Length: 450
Image (tube, rainbow, N blue to C red):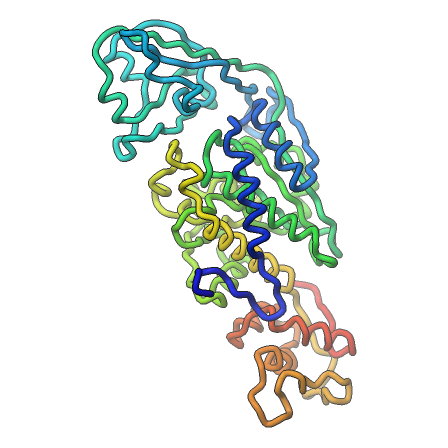
């Protein structure tokens, strides 16, 4: 890490930097004002914004379609919502903050006393100045939210409540991008795009996922194929899994990026198995940046869409790279109007991107090799002795030079490259040159993973 706490990089790996940070922040600022829900016009508008940064293919699934045990809901739109006090002053107004009405709230118009009104208003005494975010996706109800302090100051009397919403048949939209690789096996990068004004949860994850895909697109060579999917939380991934069994058959795992911009440590929500290459790669990336990664075992109560991807019948090796989302109860501003652009810090967002990038590049390199030689090969004969890295000169060899020797001694096909790197206490990226050179002169051959 450098003085600012960001990665300084690994041998052979170019890390995301200020340009990527600026791109993500520009996306955040463009997306934040848009009112989104599971299905609705704001979701489409958000995908249109992202399409300016990364071309997307938008797939649509109709309301009413059955996907496993679930049914895709209707689209949701708020026309207006407000509450007027006894003196005619509006004490709540959707135009002031959209969280004042529950997401997917039914319409309602009527009058009621203050005590009755309070029963319909969600508040959070722990965040007395913030609107809680509440939703009623799968049950018919109406409801309001307000800052605790505001509700405590309301005067007795009659209040007018007016909620005008539309729930209508429409489509669930998923924004996708695909990058082919040397093999058809796919790595999935996903995030959820549905909270109306959640900067950390989860625009931070969305912009990090988009930016990492932009970086993948710039790679001249990719071993694996990659797919990006931006969907509404829960029902989006379920619809994807129900409609694309052939894709899932080719998906070896991946990463969800969610809640990536707050000040909590970068964390790993593990896959169901807990020891897949996708789990190991995050831990490896964090170890060699000088930080111990915070891990949490697979938990059915958290992790958003990794729950479904790792579910019974699938067990896809998709892990979650997150920050405050891994802590019990989330972070203090979770699901509230306090989760705004003031909460997310560009340097934390960049660090999350750097962890995800280093982990993905670790996965790219984690293959299995077997030497074609018997006994220690005479490297000078092949023109690949690491003189340029300090070996054979009587001085101290560099880590890249050391990788030549580690690879030469361990490449019998029994370990993947990540295991060899870890057993020698070296970053996997230090092996790039020796793998390339040994393969070029015929000293190494790639073998299938067991």
